[in-house]
Image 1 (cartoon, rainbow, N blue to C red):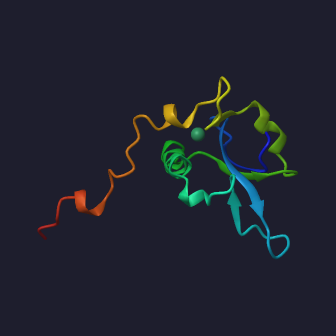
Image 2: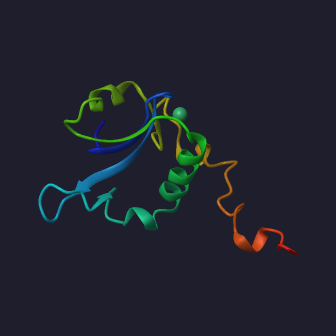
Length: 112
Ligand SMILES: [Zn+2]
């Protein structure tokens, strides 16, 4: 695990890299950063996050950073976005995922 922050489903033993925790004012994490582009501007990462949340609704999800109990177990988890087997690359994870299914414009209008 080379990045410091992870979203993990401890039931399915799968995780998604959140990146480095940024703490500009001290101990509190303000955001996570993978590379030089804001996480929210990284389409695959953002879409994978929403798919991850949907896939693991009702499961025990944890945000883990270095040093927390359970962090070391992540080395045995499958990584979404990883490129070494048994990890799942974003392209494969997102191949059937459409993030626009729930757009308000697609919903039938209520006729009251
Ligand atoms: Zn799960």
